[in-house]
Length: 186
Image 1: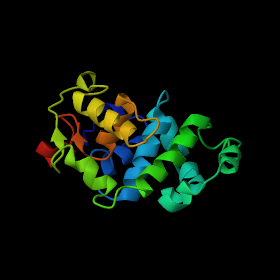
Image 2: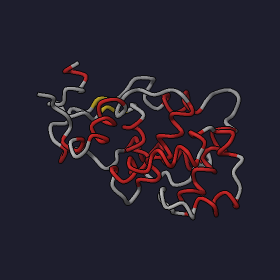
Image 3: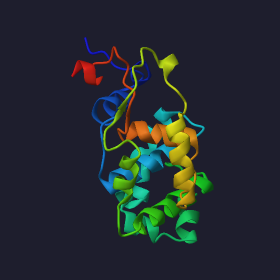
């Protein structure tokens, strides 16, 4: 029998996300941007809600093509606010466009991915977590990265959103010790 983290067993979409994406190290800028956006949309909502709307978000944000999203205008935001297939929160939609611009205009001496991974010396942090109750909402690292992201101009990147992003992008591996996807069980 397959053993997953407790939070990932409520639907086939949750299982797929858990099994194929969550806590897997990601370095691709476009994929990192998508994961950051998804965590932004999730703030205050359930992860299942975000996954249910993921395809519509991918459609509306051109599969998270940074150049196309960065070029979006206020008129595009107004159009998106009419789309019932996505989470229609103006601040989150504006943050998506803003954050694309931040990543696209990253200083030439580095990349967003390299900068992000430098916080963990290029290696995922592994927490030994036995139950969902032990999963933190945030950590000192997430609070630090959140502050640094805000300094660089990112929006909607509070410490809890940032921690979820670190998990999603694999900088932090919080699979339960009992989970088949925990590094110890691979």
